[in-house]
Each structure stands twice: as C-alpha cells, then as structure tokens.
Length: 109
Image (cartoon, rainbow, N blue to C red; front, side, top):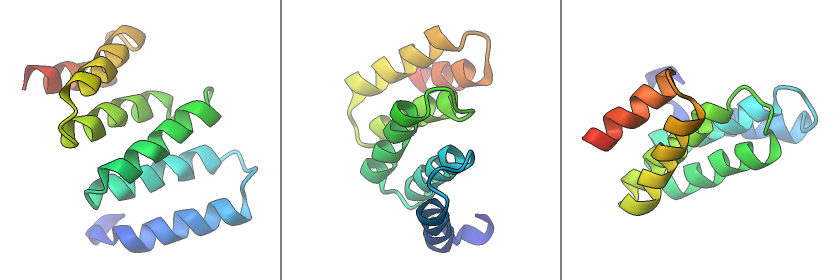
C-alpha cells in the first residue's frame, strides 16, 4: 500500500478474496480492504469491513486491530459515543497492549 496506491491495493485484495474466499488469508485480506478504505477516508466502508472481520473471523489475527479501527472509523464519522464504547472495549479486552495504548491515546485526545 506504499505510495498511496490504495485503490489498486483495494482491487487486488478484493480479487484475492473472490478467488481464495476460503483461504486462511481471507481475514487478513478483508482487514486490509478496510485499511484501504480508511486511508481513502471512506470510514463507513472501512467500518463495515472491520465489523465483518470481527463477525466472520473471531479467531483471526486481526481481531484487535479491527476493533481499534472500528473506534477510529466511528471517531472520524463523529460518532463520539460509539467511538468511546469501541475504545473502551479495546482497553478492557486488550489490556497492556499496543491496541489499548492507542485507544487510550485517542480518548485523551
């Protein structure tokens, strides 16, 4: 995703999922679709993808990242109350982690 070629990366991750929808890497590809959308400031689309990762890949390695990015997406959508709930969820579920540090930092402004 270097050089801000997010649209190209988005298309490639989407194509990967269409071909390899049952792959062990589908959760990561779905997460990175969310990251591309987030970088393109499509926070609603990003939110949908991060929520999809949480719902469909609860044991995946991008669960904490997705929960944190849901908070960021809600924050950027100016939904302060739900963003705070998302950040609180990250802090309680991932104590003493980079995720919780970033969530606390965002809460404090």
